[in-house]
Length: 251
Picture (tube, rainbow, N blue to C red):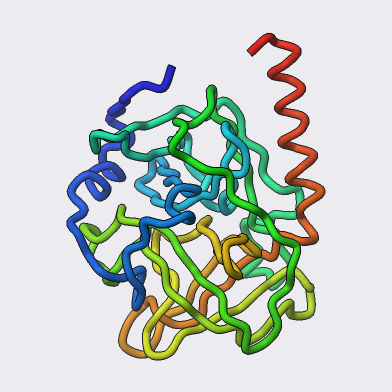
């Protein structure tokens, strides 16, 4: 059964989420209550980390690997129909074998993706996102969404799902796994949006992994994501394995 859990180790993260007021940006975006919001949740860590995640099966979410590593405990978080906070202890997680936590300092390739399995399906109001192998070209529109900060440095703006329409500035790169997008002015992902969806239309083409700031702010510059096309076989294999394991155990 999904329980309302308020563990002391998560107090710092939850303080950010529970008091989040209404706001109107991801950074340079707007609140979104559409399809993407119904296919997204949050991932919190015992070190105070806040991330976003995409629902890929009734009991599985996809996020960035750095969101579920580096801390002792993690929780999948959302609010129920009455607005009460729900925290779920993951049943399992799988970090992509190509993930390297020190990739930036080593300047090496890293596939910053992870899957998190829940002990039971999410409530019926959640929808499964459609993952798309498409690789948007330079100049194509891409929407970036998540539960991160609406204003850099203002923790109280975390916890509301927001989206911003950006434009592809550099597809693929030498590694052929990355997507870079940027908006006009200061718009893009901020702290807490890692693991969230990057979409072309209604389908998810990438997962947010990193963002840069502008001269005036630590957010609102370039947003980077991991393209899902080349990683789809890994995602499907892990999810299918968990489903078989659940059937064998009678769950």
